[in-house]
Image (cartoon, rainbow, N blue to C red; front, side):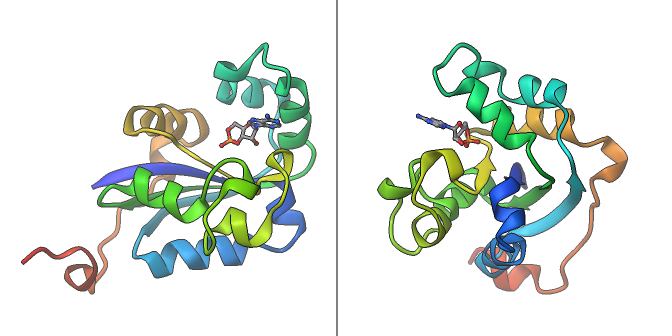
Length: 151
Ligand code: CMP
C-alpha cells in the first residue's frame, strides 16, 4: 500500500482544523499510520523545502512553517499520494475545487493549511526526513476489505 506524508500547517493547528483534516482523510478511507505534533526547526524546514530555495516566496514559507506547532502525519492507502492531494485541493486555494479542504477553509496560497507529498518517491523521502522507522505504526483494519477490496 502506498504511503504519503501530510503536514497540518501552523494555520490549520491555530484554527482548530486538525480534526477536520484527519476526519476527511479517515472518511475517505485512508489509514493513519503515524502522527506527531511538533515545532519545526529552521534546519528541518529548509531541508523539507530545499526544492523551493531561491524562489520569491521561500523566506516567507520558512517563516510560516516554523512560526507555530504543526501536526505531521503519514497516511496509507491505494494511490494514497493522489487521493490525499485530491482531498487537499490545488495548492492555490482559490483554484481548489469545491469540497476540497483548501477550497472550503482557505483563500491564500501563503496560508494553505496543509502540505501533501507530490509523488510516491517524494513521500518516501519526506517520511524518512520527518519520522523514524519506529514511529510508523503498522496495523490492520478489520474492515479493510470494505474499503480497499477488489472484485
Ligand atoms: P506546499 O504543498 O507545502 O509546498 C510548497 C509550499 O510553498 C506550498 O504548499 C505553499 O504553502 C507555498 N507556496 C507555493 N507557491 C507560493 C506562492 N506563490 N506564494 C506563497 N507561498 C507559496
